[in-house]
Length: 281
Image 1 (cartoon, rainbow, N blue to C red):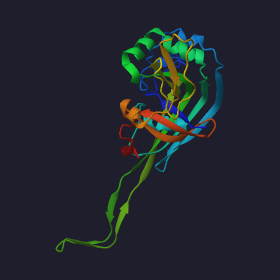
Image 2: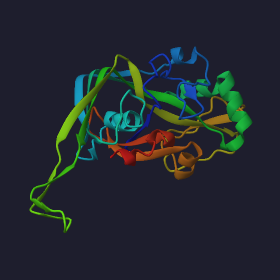
Image 3: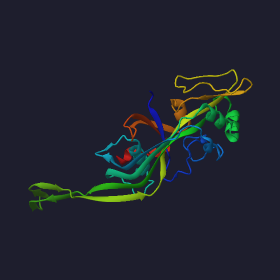
């Protein structure tokens, strides 16, 4: 079974009413700007899985090593990117806790996929874009609420102390030299009530002219057609993106772990989120 791919949202500010399960989006960096109509998600005909985890907590950064959990990855990219009220290059540890972490996902049926690509604006977008056009169906959403993030900053001021007898004529000091470096720690906490969406899953949808179907090795599902005189057929191609697609959408990908199961996953995020985070390590 291929590992799941999760796309991180671009900020802390996206609520559950902005990224909607079952909606169709044209751009993975703007999941809150759907193409599809507001009524499309209400027609989902598959079972919606709901998973809830309470009182989640962890350390996102310690001794320059970041946690690899999905939510830790989000905190790494967003918090040290400066979106919270405090970030610093001398931060030594970032801890987090969340009252509730929830997952909602569904497996779209062939009927729903066809309905999604037949949605007015979606259909126009795909046809205007030609053979290479694609859109993305939001099939999973991860939310958190009651989040507290604490940054611990360690500051040190070095003072040189010389102990000995000065010899003014020779401009020398005879005796030992000691470096004294007092260290103080400061903590800065931020709280987000939420709920906010921090990650989502998608399936890529493409439309081909009748008789010109195509496939790739990661195709999920079969070519769909309701009757012989349909001009278009639909391919649900899963959520994997190749290198060219990552470049096209301004995305980067890193390996991570699924918070609920601990399974390996791929974490995809807009390149702009990274914000030279290596400078903050």
